[in-house]
Image (cartoon, rainbow, N blue to C red; front, top):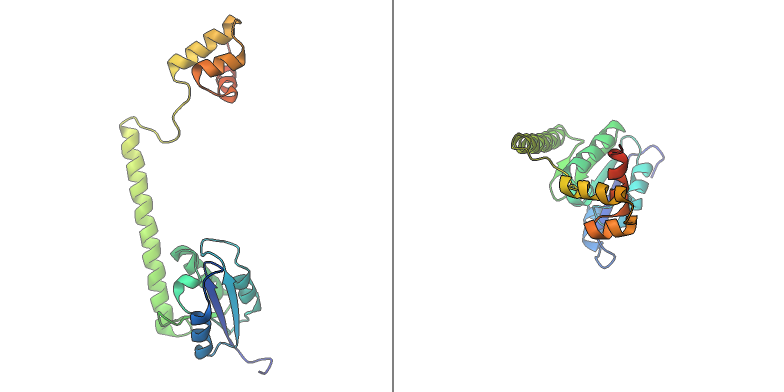
Length: 191
């Protein structure tokens, strides 16, 4: 291969060491990939050495090829961000199974439509979540962990502590709270 020729760079990933990459690497070889990088890691893992090496190796004009879209991204938003970064770096992207090729106008259009749908889905979820939180607040409900010391227990904790007859350990055991909770309450409500 000449120094200035552009190349197809393959990336294959399986989730566990027991799984086999042969299906993917065979497909990538048939596609014409001259170099294939591999990972044996869950898609959820952020640190994938093979993908990092492939991205460092690729130059502007090269094309990163995967067997299926889910081999590249941890999630749809991660996949879209990765492909956007590839485009920014002048690197094409191709998925064999889904017949997506961002080096062609139709492939770019399809990928942008997928990206727009993913963004739309995130916005809908955010809207629903905010509406649910607002509805709960309107009914007097607030998110988060329940307080360990309700007003009655808080009053009892203060009385036991100020009375001087109980030590901190006994107060905590009696009320079923931690020392940190007791001290946080005492410091926040210091006379």
